[in-house]
Image (tube, rainbow, N blue to C red; front, side, top):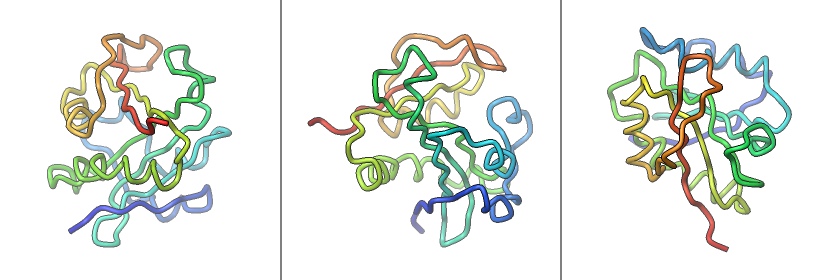
Length: 159
């Protein structure tokens, strides 16, 4: 099986309504259907597909650098990553993050880097991001709703 991505819009909330967070994960991310109804300018939602089925969700945020002082000028952000609770543990999240560079090259070719924050209480997610090539900056973001978060960054284009 292989992971793919499909662009979503606010009208696609019914298509992602079945996606749920796992026990204890509510503090780390929002339900995708709700998130689609609350998109900010510059946020571009994507479905994570596995065998053609929507099994996950993420947002690429073009306005990330304007919102967070730790972000480089023009840097994009990765937000609201979720793999459906019923599909976690199958390697889908790892596969999706491994294909993220391809999505970025195809859809955001001018992006030089991608940043995210991951809660310090979520080491499993941090490990998935590290495996995909995100490096820990060594700094923490303290503005999250559920405690401190590691700031991770992936270098994309080189020029």
